[in-house]
Amino acid sequence: MLNLMKYRNMEKIVAIVVTFNKKELLVNAINGILSQDLLPDKLVIVDNNSDDGTPIVLLENGWIDVLPQVSANKDIIYSKKYAEIEIDYIRKFENDGGAGGFYRGMVHSYELGYDWLWMMDDDGVPEKQCLKFLYESRDLNIVSGPLVIDIENKETASFIYDKKTSNKFALVKDLVKEEILKNVLNAFNGTFIPREIIKEIGFVKKEMFIWGDENEYMFRIIKNNFSVQTITKALHFHPLSKQTYKYRSTVFKFTIYEIANPKFMYIRCRNAIYLEKIKENKVLFGVNIPLFRVVYEAIVNSIYNFAIGEFYKSKLCLSAIPNGLRGDFSMSKFK
Image (cartoon, rainbow, N blue to C red):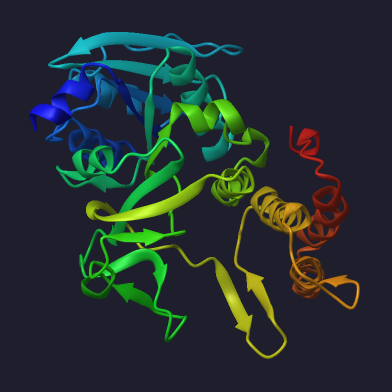
């Protein structure tokens, strides 16, 4: 512990939590961060313009001193000393998704000079030794993450599937048999990132809004000859991965997504196509099979939505194809 604290005097850690309209869950996340055996030096709360009373809850808990002013065109930042750490509350003037929130938190923390960024969303809760174990396993060339566990039953992983069944979540008792799961990372669920890697590869791609921003960032990490890993002693509790599909065909290899918001339907299709476009996939007989599959899936979803009378959503599924291939992230059509 003495050696650990010696390095902590030289290296500074910031915890970043991004939230939108989940005030009760946010309280649990913040309490989890503030209860760590190894406290971060700063907590940055990035609020994507929540309208559920999030600032009031933060004020009631003493994490901010005043309610934020209303701004139509700029972010507002409030800072205060809370117990042993500093808290920065960034009240954004717009909601640009989880990707935009993490981008804002990363830029803010990087510009302040922090050595390690510990990033998570608002519905996860780190176990009290999570940061300690991540810090003890730190490596300037590796992005590490905790083992993300179902917050309800504590027996299965929230995102990692069992290799044998492929459709069931892996059991925690099996995963912890290895101290480190190499090349495995559930990004932005307690992810521990060294400043040096951010300096090399940049920040989260905010234009992706939601769905796939974490995979795009992991792709950049690995492409630039860095590594990812999961430290199984470090635990982070999170709800199970949400299924957003209505029907999945294993024979014809497509999924019908159950996404009510047309904007989000478009984003999912576009981002999936963009990700496969930039990856170095294997080409078979001149065809990028993974890319072909997601384009085919967007077409199937377009046909399905047309058949049920969702004509606007059907059109968006098709328009996502050329925009995903071009990497066009303009959202002007939704303004």
